[in-house]
Image (tube, rainbow, N blue to C red; front, side, top):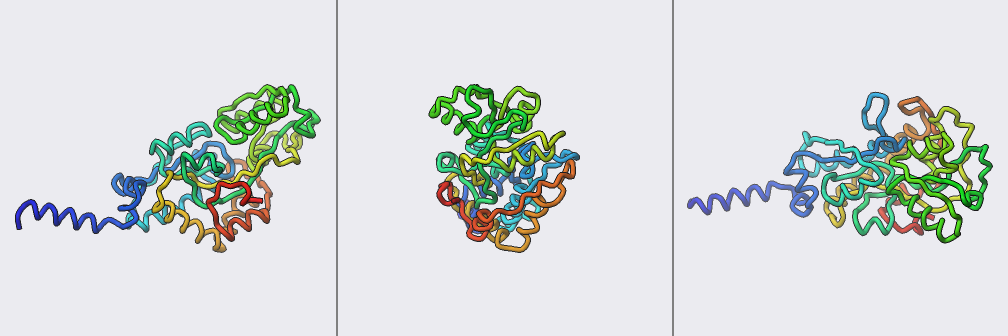
Length: 301
């Protein structure tokens, strides 16, 4: 056999040995070639993705994402695939996904139509709502009560975007501060630098539960927006999406999902052993029974 034909034959063998999904998916090809899948995670999005008292990254979203990692290992026939953890913030998570630094982002990221122009999302794993947190002593009952007051939200969030737009629409004259993360925003309310903190209610419940004086705070009754969470992934990668969505749909419809939810929302969690005591909502039960990666808020009503 001539040398040129030999090289061609070897190349063909190598190509055929590569799983079809990896041939079709830029993300899976990148993961296969590097031997590593890079997971973006949060540092304080309790109970979804955060550092515990041993500085290990844990959480509800992380557990779900590791099921996706297992599916990728099986798809690529790479049981020894390395998992690299890369911390992200609300402000950096989308740019780091868009530029290829991370392959999957596991945290408390809202899936909406605007974000889908830049990134993709796996099947939704939680549904929450945008509300405010304030001290009971401030006597805040409605959005109108915050007129002219200082409020805060976290940089890079849908909550901050909504708050800024609503402040203008209703001519509320609020002074809006931006925090680098949820812990800093909560501290601003705790220390009196801000009257209210606008964020997804499940994250607010978590912050209150872990605070020094949980009974000092109130979370508003009005839900301003619906916030479906999913793991973020590269845009327009159908083969990678299929692996992720197949893995999550299988998990969601299994008894294991009930146990996973109870582990993070109904039982004591690290680092302080606090129990959030948040039963699964009827809406989340519906979403898990009929998995969707839709970013349309109308789907979640």
